[in-house]
Every structure is written in structure tokens, then in C-alpha cells.
Length: 504
Image (cartoon, rainbow, N blue to C red):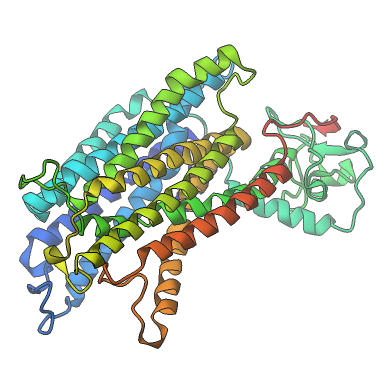
């Protein structure tokens, strides 16, 4: 979960980002090792029947070690790529002096997310089909080849990239601000910002600290210029006196945490895709009635990707220009409104999922399939009924996730762009962990007394619909929590503060 933030700590400049992305070739090595566990016999456990498991042997230490090492390497690689790829791409087209720069960056962020959607779409259709019809060897080998090509292409083109000078470590800066504040917490701040003297860096985006989280301003307050400053104007002790830039960076992170936490629930709901896959396997997945071709259960996730991609492209190329022409919103739907709409559509998706599952389960019981498993448990009901909930989840992700990325990128100082993007990845990771914990809690609580678990493997006896209703209830509560956080955050654009006296 912390890999993205760990990578972003040292990647807040283009030079560091190139090195971080290059090191993410570890992901290719990890995927290659996973591929080897499928094609090299000594790395495979003995054959185990999926139904009769009495004589199954566990994997050896070497086999498990190779498997877990592949996962670790892939995590390191993806942590490097996901933490910096958006910020690095934005650096290539960033032209602050041009009036259209903000719109160009926003368009890039939208289209970047659309390209991610296309990649996921290929994964859940073509790669899933290869794995099911040809074999896991080809299923793992294909992404290894694609990742190798992309890594080589990235490194070959490195001389063409915009490379910005490295900046200081953000996390070290946060620690210095906290240290300086603790040393000065007994001091009283001037009544007005304009009455204080503060340490500013050359070319800093801030000429004076803001009023928000005012107590932290003590960290950059100059008490005695003779004792606190060197002859060149720098701080004698950077752990006792910080710059306004460092203070405002920590403020930006603290202020954004509540809204970030309110978006976790969407990931909790959207990442529960194992259950729709199980539902799809128990339904009629044939495209044409009477044919033998069945859509792989996992491939129904393509409707999430398609909806998200279509929405992002339509929004960027059609809706934003129309809103700019006919409304006061020159850059499209306000960012915080986008995130709120994403949470609303998440709630709608879980509601639809609950209703569809109730109908599917009722039909299975009426057909006498409650005790059946496998193909014998397939209900006379088209899996197309699952498409609406997938589309709603896709629209929710297109609104909330893209909104989050735009929000973090616009609200954080430029020096924090990598950490800003990493927060979205961290939110997804936390959502996955909380989602897994929720599943365990519901499963344990509902089978007390020997009862059938709501989330049991016997899908026609389980109550997945009840679980979806729990997600709906939590999503409704989360919407109110988000509205409170949004109101407390205030306007998205930074307020103009009174300028104090700044020492460079």
C-alpha cells in the first residue's frame, strides 16, 4: 500500500522520475518470474484436482518463495510507475507562461486515465480469453513481452524527455516543519500575517504563509534575523526555521486528508469484483442463445472500462467545451462536484447490484438450484443483467477517480505533484484492504450458529444481495461525510492572503 508514496518521496523532479520509472523494470522481472512459475516444472506444485482436494500437497518453500518474490517485484515496479507517470507526463507538456496551459494539463489528465482504461479493457478481454482458451503460460507470457517492449521503448527515448532539476525530499521537509513548530509552539504569532517576518526561498510560489492551519506558521516565523539567518539569508538551522514553501506544502497535505478519506468508500465498493464474477458464472453468458460461445465471466468488467473511457473522452472533448461556451464553468464540472457525483453513482451501482442479485437468487431457488454447484447451478437468466451495475461503476470511477487526480494536481504545490498523484493510488490500496476486512467481518458474523454465510461459495444459498445493501448503506453515509469534508475544505481555488514581510 505504501509503495507508491515511498517511490514518490524521491521522485518530485523529472530526473528522479526517469530513474524511478527506469527502476520499475523490476515489474517486468517480477512478471517474468511469475510466468516461469507456470512453465517451469520445479517451480510448480503438484497437480491438485479442483473438486477432490484430499490428497493435495502444499507448495514447497522454493515454489512459494518464487511466487511471493514475483509479487514483490511487480509491486515495486507498479509502485514506481503509478506514482510518477502522470506527473512525469505533465512535465513534458507543462508551459506555465501560456494561457491555455491549465486546460492542456486537465486534458492530459483526462486522456491519461482513458488510456489506462483501454489497457485494462485489453487485460479483461484479450488476456482473459488467452488464459481461459490457450493456457496460463501464454496468458502470463503475453504481458511479459508487452512490458519488456514498453520498458525498452521508455529507456531508448529518455534523451528526448524534459528533465527538471531535483528538489529536496518532501518527507524530510515535513519532518523539519514539525520539528520547527515544536521548538516554537510557545511563541505567539502576530495578529496579522502582514505583521510577521517569514523565511522565503528564491522562486517560491508563496510570498507569505496562509491563514489556514495558522499555528504551523510558527515554523517559518523569523524571531531574530541575526540569530536565525546566515549572511546569505538562509536558515542557520533548517530544523528550527523552515521556509514558507515547506510550511504550505505540509498544510496542503493535512488539509486534503479528509476529502481523500471520503473517497475511500468508492474503492471499497468498486473493488468487490469477485462477487459479480461468481454471479456471471452462475448465469447464461452466451451472446447468442443456443450457441456454444460463452463470454468469460471476468470479461464483463469490460463494461466498467468502456463506460469510464467513453465518459472521460466525451467529457474532455464535448462537455467541457460546451460548458465553457454556455455556462460560467470554463473548465467543466467543478472538481469537487465531479467527486461527489462519483460517490452518488457508486451508491446507485450497489443498489442495482443488490436488486439484480435478489432477482437472480430468487429465480435459482424457484428452479430448484439452491443445492447445485458448477454448471448445474446455472440459472436461466442472462448475464447481461449485470451490465447496468458495471456501467454505473464505470461512470462512478470516471467521475471520482479523474476528479481526484485533477483535484490533487491543482491543489498541491507543483513540487508535490508526485505525492498528489500517489494519494489516489493509496486510496485504492486502502479501499482494497478495508473491502477485504469488510468481507471477512460479514462472512464471520453471518455464519455464527452454523448458518449459511451471506458470502459463501454456494452462491444460490448465499445472500450476496444483503452484502450489496450493506455497501449501499455505507455509501449513503459516506456521501454525507464527503459533503461535510467538502464544505470544511472551502473553495478549490486558493484564497489570496495578505502578504507579510518575506526574507529571501
